Image 1 (cartoon, rainbow, N blue to C red):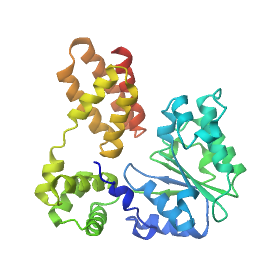
Image 2: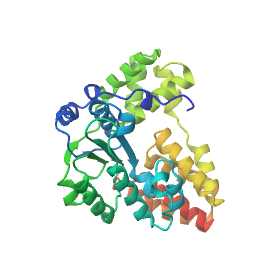
Image 3: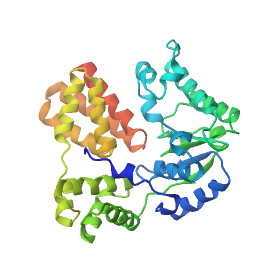
Image 4: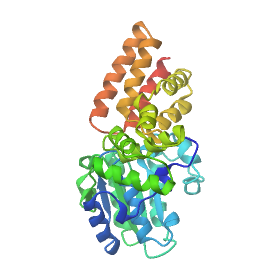
Length: 334
């Protein structure tokens, strides 16, 4: 998908968020800034809600909203973290720090900077399902130290994994999955804004395909439009009804076997983030490819690893991390 993603170009306002309770809670936070935990399933719109809040509360949200994807950062190597242009200024001359120390230092320095406008800035810790307890303890201390100038917002699918002292310093906003009708309403407005020809059956099909995942619905609508120039029932079925991951999965597995883990992980990111597939869908296609690609002990090993990953995905934690571990094992045993 080469065009700008609609999920980026159509950021909602607080008033246009589909869930009434979220609109009510965030509207209150506009006038009473506080640390937040937004808890809800994948694709419910947690990140979009934080961006909507920042747009309402900051004159310069591009600079006063700092987004750190916890899944992404913790799965990186020290070198990748050090070379990230967002973090490099904080880590010059600090190559001897451990990865945990690097992340803590970046967070502490980010919290310590004065806001560009207004009296406070916002730091978003996105996808915090697997955040380690020692890092949570460090985060708690940073929150206490910078509570006057920094609002911390944590998004997670599993708030129970956060330590009590951290939860007690935040107000929790439950973010439920949007209903089918709410997704239809969002898609109708977005397609109208894009000037896309569509019909009700096409939008209904895309909403059903998304199964409560708003991000997946928007990506599905854009995919349908880019492939067929419209979002009708026929176009949506042809674009989404028999979606095949096989080509990308084949490339991903080949890269992993060749030890090109960065390429393999980039392909995984494309599937999970850009194309909007769930970890379960990707794992299912990995097994499908494995049945035709491997035999004997190698096939048995893939099924064993897939079984472990499937159990982890069922718990709802960090699809990217668990699938990346499978790829790393493939490379190690390749």
